[in-house]
Image (cartoon, rainbow, N blue to C red; front, side, top):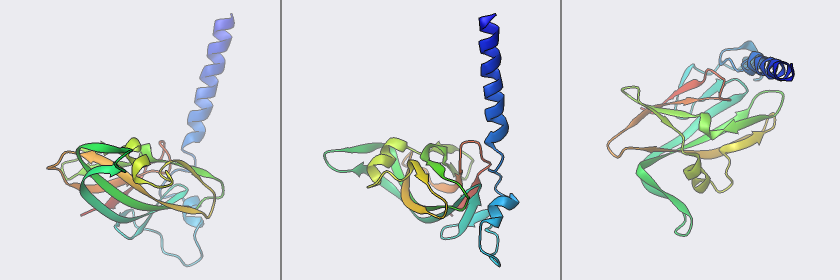
Length: 177
């Protein structure tokens, strides 16, 4: 009887988490768009470097992209790429009405053929002076700028990013080409 009750409680908790997880994470939701000032144009669904792109409670602006980096960090503490590091500098602003945690591991990069690469959170810690891309809580209206690091083969070129306000969101695409 105890096992059944415990399993029922766990199942109920998981269902409750699943039901609320994506409630405000839609990249095209009116709540996310209402966070801006009156008269602002909605950001494009696919943005380019320098353009704002929204997903849920976050507005992402990719500032720069630099590939071909062999190591990040200092000579004493750092991380060496298996292939090459691509350093993507991104400004992230919380456009919602409550704190939201930026999770670097939810960010993805893609090549022209659709191959997906995950953000290297360990290398990201060395590439950022304040670790602002790894579980950084951002209050409403505040923003952080940080470097997301992707370890990709030497002969590969990234063409786009898929940026997420959480692991449950639909994401927004930013072209690197």
